[in-house]
Image 1 (cartoon, rainbow, N blue to C red):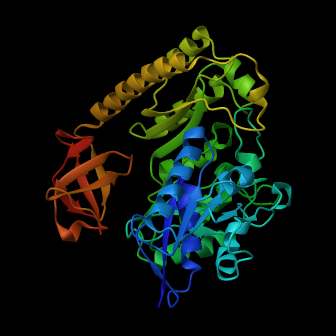
Image 2: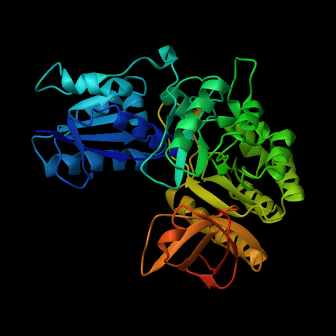
Length: 433
């Protein structure tokens, strides 16, 4: 009989692409894929370690899996495993711990266990991790996360990702394009480029991120490409101009800000200042007035005084971004920020976070309001709820219309009309394909 296997992914889009690749490594004639909430023989959790909350969610998922089947084998893989293998190995409900390189050998480890009792741990030293495994998510007919880069060389003072993922690395443009063709062959129409620091693509070679984008635009079958998160200093004028003229790249940008205070940005050891960030936003809006620009902001960094927090609020109010992903600062092991004696009290972090969420909602409402009556191309997704189907415009506004099976995985031109839930109600006016 086939062994039942279930996967659970936490964290970033990069993790989702990697989980999909790992899932495909298990032979279909030997393993049956089931939902993580079902009873399985093997549970595999691709973990995240960006915050303490992410680590807590990993442990909770592992504990719940073991409760569903006490005889199951629970494996925790990925960033949490890489950073804290000892902590995970002490948990009685975790049977295997695999770091970010060893996770690709999971089939071999599962089929050839070294012990029936002790937790098995395989975690390579982060400095020795050199290989890059191209991957993409599948199972969704509509969109796919395409991994184009891994690792980071920035070592921001608050971030543990370089210690979990290693140095920045990627494969050649040619090899990346080959994977994009595989995505297209599955009938997927939109890809989201993902990585730890995708703007660093090609570092150490004669190629760069712009070279990759030019070739991706030529891939037959891929109708839409979103760039996802890209560091401000790596989003060049030529990249912005390419997107503005392209029929494939979408006017949707994710620019990590982290703070609107130059003092804090310096303390974080970021590679840009607020002037450069504002310039990138202005350049995008000059060429693409209806473009969506999302920003990441960290609340409660140790040196963030009330005055510096207000600097961030003021800066965000003055620039034309669409909404904000707000994160509360979380102490991470082996990061330089741990050396800073001052810490913002938790209650104060919560208050500031609440203020930032309110500002985000205001920004988003303004962005939506400015798009009323405009026409956009929407890719409708394979989901139905209350006889309604939803999709996303090119500039990342959610829309809803009456369910019609023929709309699934189709690109349709719509005019944004009445506000509905977290998006707009639209009538489909023109089928693009």
